[in-house]
Figure 1 (cartoon, rainbow, N blue to C red):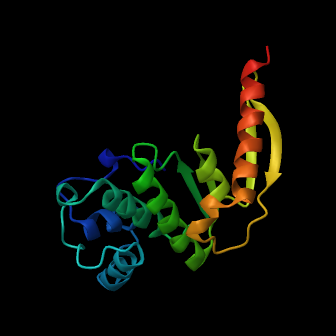
Figure 2: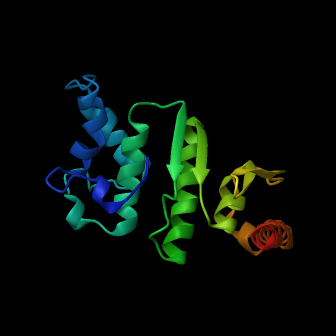
Length: 176
C-alpha cells in the first residue's frame, strides 16, 4: 500500500479512515471502535481520532495510513516509498515511528525505497536490485540490533554500510 495523501478519504475522520478496510471486508462491528482508537494511540495521534485529514500535517496523515494498513492485523505489510513526499526531518521522524509501531506486532514487512539511509535504518536485510533486466544484484544483512537508536544515523558503522550500498548502486548505473 502506498501512503499518499490522497489515500485518505477527506470526508471521513481519522478513525473512520482507519476503520475502512474492516468495513470493506465486512468485519467491522461496534465493538471495533475501541480497537480503532487503540491504533490511533499506537501511531501517536491520541486526541485526533475525530479529526478530518485536512486538519492533519503530512506526517500525521502518513501515520493514519499506517494505522489503516495495520487494522486488519496483516502478517505481511507492503510499503512502497511510504515517505517519499516528506522532507528529510519528517522522513527520519516517520522512520522512528514506523520502527516503534513495527516493534509492537512485527509483521513481515517489505519496504521499497530509494532512500539508502532509510533502508539501512529500517531493514534487517536489504535486497539491491539491478535494472535491465531487473534482478537481484546483492543481498545485504543489516548488522544493527533492535530497537535502533536515533544516534545510529551518526555512527561510522551506519555510514560505512550506506557508502557500500551507494557504491554498489552507482557501479550498477555505470554498467552497460
